[in-house]
Length: 186
Image (cartoon, rainbow, N blue to C red; front, side, top):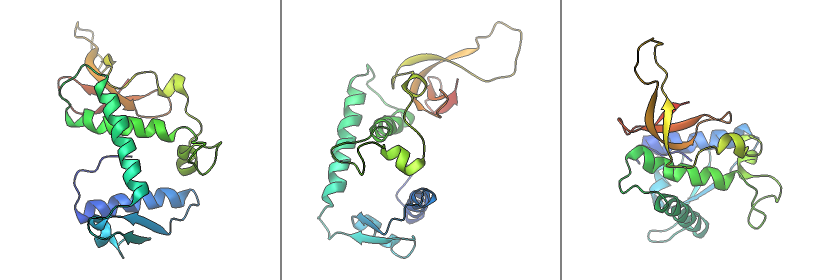
């Protein structure tokens, strides 16, 4: 999951194509996308049939998935002491629960009881909690900022808020308090 900057035709086409390419890189060939009318202009622009529901109707599985995502995001946000969420935190609050949910097999509702959706779609192995979940979302941290090495007394860390893992080697995205923008720091 990744946030999109807007919902224009160009952005939607690029995002859907990126997702289709990811699936196809693993040998999975989606044939139908179930969507609402917002995606109907993509018909013929992407390499997959788009099945759109009528106005004021919904795709049940998609609506349930959206509700689950919203509940997990709300739960994550409510456990923090923050009252305001800059865009970087809001985007990450949606990414983090989705990452966790897809990192584990779903024995009740998955394709397989043994392999996680993340492994099926991306080929990444099981989640290594010791590396990928060192920090809880929203934790206040002192992050090392890469800069030119100097021998002065300036601090080498900056106050930041942890967002979500940036890689499988223990890297994280942080939001430095001074900028409120997401960045990858140690």
